[in-house]
Image 1 (cartoon, rainbow, N blue to C red):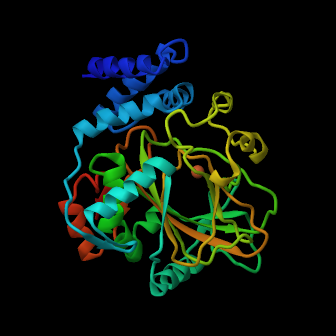
Image 2: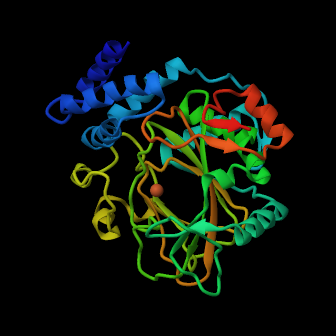
Image 3: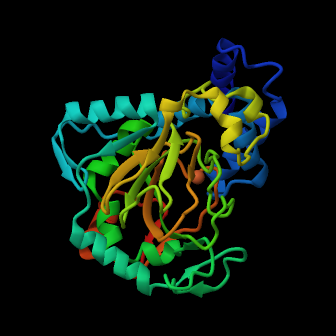
Length: 351
Ligand SMILES: [Fe+2]
């Protein structure tokens, strides 16, 4: 099986002229051996995680996309022809195809429909009362006080978030799941929810708060869904990304040589036309999806704060070793959904 995968990958890499000298075979070996370990134990060795990044950088994404093609074969997607309704709106098969084409082309898609005011208020109030961890140690939970922020970012605990019924409802949203299904080309696994306050504690770009351009690489392929829970303007840290930079071959090789690095704007700007550099402002409830292989960052806040909720769907739990999400507080609907959608719930345990 592994030999077969290697052979296919070699062919793809050769086709793009990337087999030699850019792909050290040791990296492929670490990756493939790590995948074997993952299949047996559910855990990815550190060197396979590093190899995923190195192979992404050395092949400009060819390797990772080709490997996802293999993952798709072992986890084929359900065929959905129905019109589906969810928080982002009502989508026919044709609408889904348009969204997916836009994802492939641009890396992000924005929706007109927003989360209801009621849902935003409920999540906002939850975030005002729930303690979150702050840098540099992220070891103590503190409730965010807007009058006296103590850090540029307050991150909520995944285990807390997954026990919030409002968030459980969003995780099961059939439209969001179908966006992931189409983009990943397989039955999506729910990876994790994330939520954080960005604050104006520090006015300069913070690496901790991901305020310098970077790409994510915790998985082979993934889709993120973003919700702005409060209004986001140019003053309170809009999300920025470079349209189309998720595509295979779309990053300058000279920047990829830096590896998994944070890149100053001035180093990226010469390579991309200004109209591809997108700044996402939006009212509370705004919804957008994205492939954060695109160069992306948050902007340092001039004032106020920003609350973002994010859901991630993935094609495989290979690469990052995130703990299983333990749900003690599942709604009946969420319990039922996890029981009947085992791929979705691969990393969720209902107590
Ligand atoms: Fe990121």
